[in-house]
Image 1 (cartoon, rainbow, N blue to C red):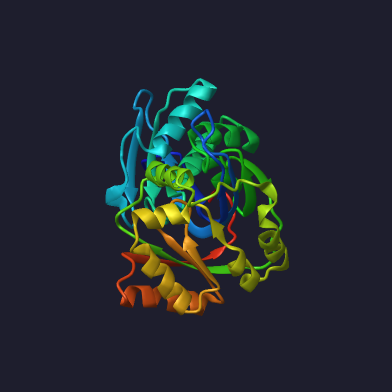
Image 2: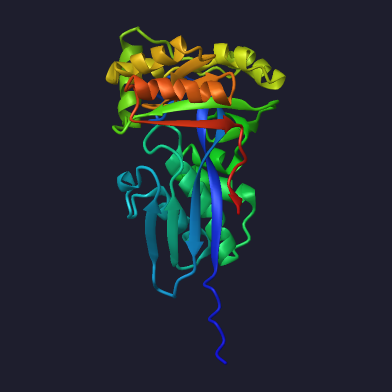
Length: 311
């Protein structure tokens, strides 16, 4: 009687996408970055990364499935690939791993799907390789990959300062319902920030990276009050995103006409986020976007959600 081969070790990790409940952007610093104050909320739309052991010297391989998978790079430009390389370098191991990404967050939509992939990869490879890093260590590595990666590790709701990577947990109560209108054609984050700088220079926008700018929003979160939260949503980059993609104004207007408690461009766009009264209301807003041909895909979800975790 022959024995079955032992299964190849693998680790599967889920990490959330996010919505910026508020985003305040300061003037461009000498280091080329804008200081940010943002309130992030993790949503139940998530990425799943499976890291599988391969032979010594095999290097990194990457496969992807799910919505918009054809838009995801499969080489060293992918944040998940870079995360595996960074962790391996940090602990002195060879970066030998097969990564598989199951997409659940709109691609290039301002919802940090790529950052969620990186966060999930850090957690998965740490577990697979037995490197034993603390979550604090992984957060520090995540900050080297991108300003949204630490939040994907953290999850829930948090205030981000600096480049958005310095996080302070925020108290929240209850569950919030969201509808998202995604577009197949993404918006370049550097292009949006560039237009923001042009609008500031022209006197059409004022930089507002102030830590105390979100008092009403924080009170709404602590009270679990979706109506007050909807009224307090804010995004300094929205004007720049709309300047580059004026058709998004119609998507916002449809959500508002549909009774959304608040509607805004998510992060640097082009995804539009609408806060709804209930799951059914979110589905109704999404259905109207589809009927009015105001989105290439629609997504409904709840928030807040947990950070990157092993399944």
